[in-house]
Image (cartoon, rainbow, N blue to C red; front, side, top):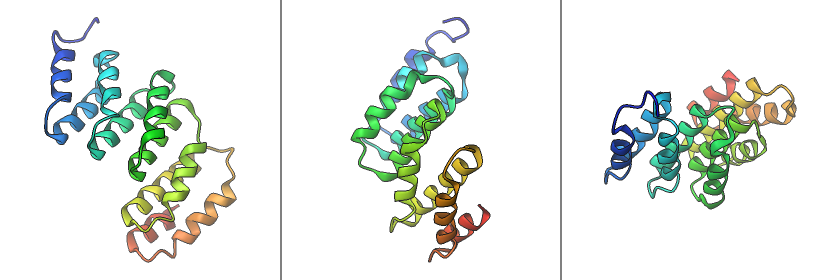
Length: 168
């Protein structure tokens, strides 16, 4: 591929197999930030959707969503990974990536609303941020339902969740 440094794809593939999850997650972030590494990089990041580490799967989903906006190349691999995902945070990231790529918001809204009612404070915060972003971006949504949920989160027991919800 024109512009790709010689051996870069092979180097990334080797790093994607590194035993340390931080290194594997950084591969996804690196590919996201460098258009010269596509399409080989896309295939490498897609393979990271199946990683055993939650953080790596989440980084891969975010990278694909941000790097491939308006391109359906990764929707099928993301949808397949989402069907098998049992971690709510990773599923939310995968749903957000599908939304960023295809514009399909239903799954993201479902996951974000579910997450906003979770006992996990971190998941509630991520869900609030996702709901805020969706309401700010998508004009043709049932805003009243989302606003009601964000208002309810304004009374959350966790101060960070309350603050995030009130900004919305």
